[in-house]
Image 1 (cartoon, rainbow, N blue to C red):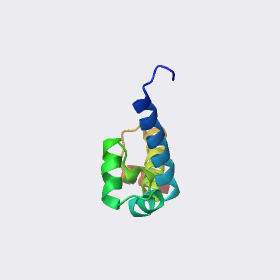
Image 2 (tube, rainbow, N blue to C red):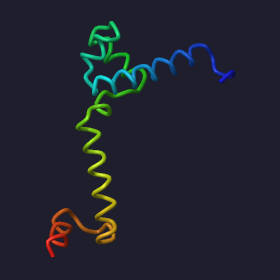
Image 3 (cartoon, rainbow, N blue to C red):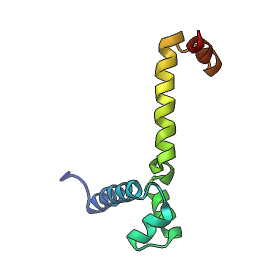
Length: 94
């Protein structure tokens, strides 16, 4: 870390702070901005500049990712990953 410039340390700290803030606010940018003392538009600009997205911190996004991952793992084991949801449902019914 000693090789990093001051501005790089600030960027790392800002990203870490915003990730935690978005997690705490379930990806709600308005609430995160209020807690940070920023305007919502400024928060969006800051997130974009740092390459962050509030969508990744919303509970429904986390649920979709985990359900999708579980389905892929399960269907891959059931039919070698070559079947779709209807094929898996048919196998489950049998």
